[in-house]
Amino acid sequence: MTALLLVGLLGGIGAATRFVVDGAVRARWARTFPVATMLVNVTGSLLIGLLFGAVTSHGLGPGWSVPAITGFCGGYTTFSTTMVETVRLVQSGQVRRAVVNAIGTTLACLAAAALGVAVMALVP
Amino acid sequence: MARHGGRMTRQAHRRPALVAVVALGGALGAAARYELGLAVHPVDGWPLATLLANLAGAFLLGALLEALVRRGQETAGARVVRLGLGTGVLGGFTTFSSLALELERLLAAGSGAVALGYATVTLLLGFAACLGGVVIASRHHAWRYAGATADGADGATG
Image (cartoon, rainbow over all chains, first blue to last red; front, side):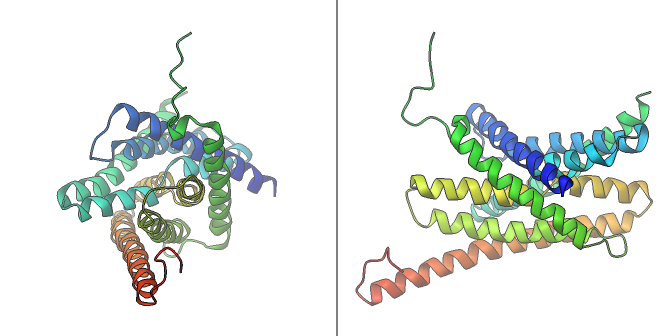
């Protein structure tokens, strides 16, 4: 029960952080390509890799890791918005950008997560 | 001190009440995803809980945003619905970081084929689900509008 509440609390903070970061990036950098969502997803994937690495390499316990990983990282990053933006790109005839957005986000997030895990394995 | 926030239309992400709406929705979405993760276990290495959350969330967000767009000029109430249910609940329910970490774990474990299959299915079905949500919401809107005008009634009522 405590875990559920902490996941919810950090999930809410994560979603609010995404909203603020996304809005700030859009306000400064208006592009047809959805860079704001991609930036949020890549930074959140780096963070989840660092946290998972802290669990496996440094013994971070589930009391903190579950709310941080499932709550904050999950609430901060979003798959649904990436899909809506991909559909909108296809609808406006920008198929190439849509493919780059979907596959590029996935590969960049995978690389960021792997980097996070690797960095924590190197930290003494 | 110079103050730039005094405009009538302050950006949504700089309004504490709207940030709180997103946080409340995000808390519910993340908690629901956590419960889903406890109930649904991986099958043959496939992280089904994340897959289900992402596909359902993509469908629902496509339908929600299309339905709201088709209502025309966004009202204050509609914006709270969009930010609370869309950006908050559905944004918090779906996740890209878990997908990324699951792919990394599959690759690290030597399950490259499962990783490729999982990523491909997530993207293809996620796109199809989202597009399906958009199409259903647009058709529902067209149907409601046509029905209302055929009766000679105001198009805004359903």
